[in-house]
Amino acid sequence: MVCVAFYQSPVGKIKLISKEDKLIKLEFLNQDPNLLFAKEICEKCDEVVLKQTREWLDEYFNGKNPSFKAIPLNPNGSEFAKVVWELLLKIPYGKVCTYGELAKEVARITHKNKMSAQAIGGALKRNPIPIIIPCHRVIGANGKLTGYAGGIKKKIALLECEKADLVNLYHF
Image (cartoon, rainbow, N blue to C red; front, side):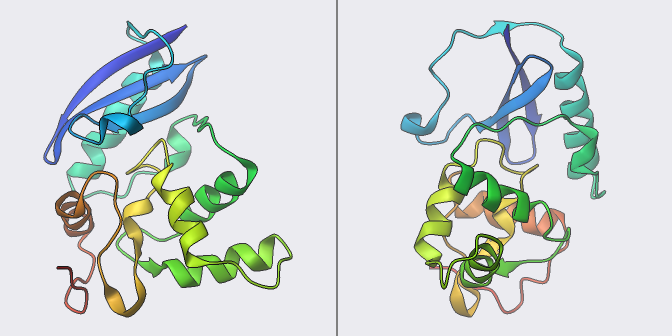
């Protein structure tokens, strides 16, 4: 059964979706409707994983560094995207890396000569569980704040919540 819950966060209302006791989706409700979960009918229910996710988000938005391991995750995506998302989980709380740095690491792991930053951006755009799988911690070359499905303002707010050093980062 697919279950849904809602969470009111400092960056707006969030929809949480679980299936078979695992979190499969976290959506900002003002996000691009083409990216929103619409494939299955969701039922409201009080599944344990949704409670765990709300507790995780409470900790996160209170400036703590909750472990992603506290929530069983099951993001749907290609094998390539899953490699990228696994690497996102290794970016420390309050830190950032560039699309290029992530591309080099994915190339190393997948035994490729090189990987484009654009391919990484495509995987991040499809991240079904933002915040917990922290795609907001990835920035453009030279510190440019770019590319976040929830919008740049949310990306900045999440990085500020983590007390990331934003001094050398910029956006247009």
